[in-house]
Length: 167
Image (cartoon, rainbow, N blue to C red):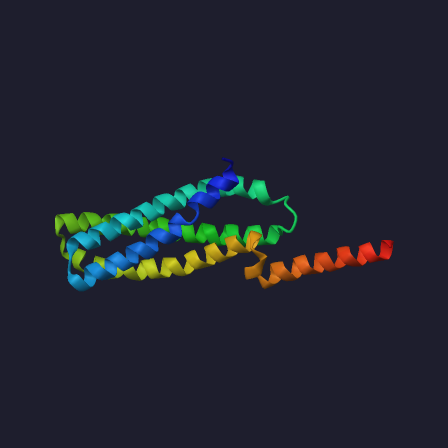
């Protein structure tokens, strides 16, 4: 298994964990179940750890695909920037969740507002998760990128035109 494959295996986890965490946290808020809230905090922490893994494999994945036909360096750079921002927010979400988890166990007064703080920050983080995921997908899935599709179609038209000129 190379770094590109490993990146593809782990890169969805930092996006999936916050989605699951938000669902569980909202359930915990409405049912006033501390166990659900604590489990969601733990899931956000796992998401931050998964972001570390995704970022650690990203550079190797870049080296593995940057010379493939149809892969634009600009798409890789756009994804890298989006992923760095999302990872940073994911780390902060993990940190806030760690504080919320500790406050919940210690029954601190501010633990009552922590679920709302965490869910709002998690929703904001998910916005950037979508950007990182979409820009990553555009690198090899030209069907979701109008830019990538037009670049490849343009290259195909040039190749076909050159082929007809040779005949």
